[in-house]
Length: 315
Image (cartoon, rainbow, N blue to C red):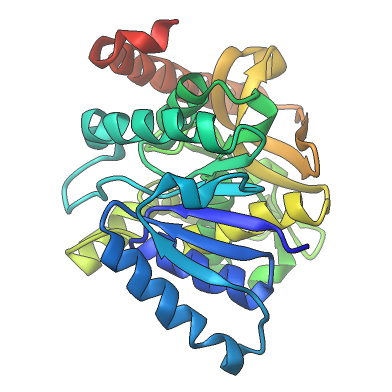
């Protein structure tokens, strides 16, 4: 029996995810959106491409949570995207209301699902969803680190003129301007990155990575990145559904790891059939630890702001 994958939000990321999941044959797709015609139209369009792609999956579009019942995986992309000049944090109030509704519905319809949140501001939205839904923390995770790491890899590959697949790296911390790219944990064909690039060029790439989403928004003018975020979400879903036990940087619940408790933040985790099966703790030097702590501080402050908007989050 094929798995059931629900995508909450049929916008650019949701639609791209539906197509990727279809091509990879990860499972049948339910594309949900309050704008039912948008969900139905995209689902039908992608369904008509399955014979070309050679994939055997079913896709439906809906505005009813009843159609999402007993989903194996749910990926949440619903929310307002950033506009030029906006930070992810500017979306807090609007998207918090959306996530609350989604959390309450999923609690009733798919309490055993593995849930991946992509809605910004990411770290706060995934934390809020877990509280609203009551789903176990190992079954609720945020997509950010894979995307940020992918951007870091791409910029490095362009500078070093090597294939991106030759680069191993990751980005920790919150999904925002305080994210922490990890040059000391980066290798290129097994060689240490610091032997291949000057400090000045590396710092420019680190800053470009932190502003990676804003750079795309500036070009697009309307909307934000969607291809790379969708690919990141699909990789997480695949690791869960196929029990691949990949080590991936994600926004995960921390219960003492990295000296942080009761908070979601970007760290390497192992994703398998039990969800987040392990948080991988890296040895951080003082500078990395200071930057990580600074990022955690920013996440905590924004969550405090969220609790002022909705005191229910304090429960």
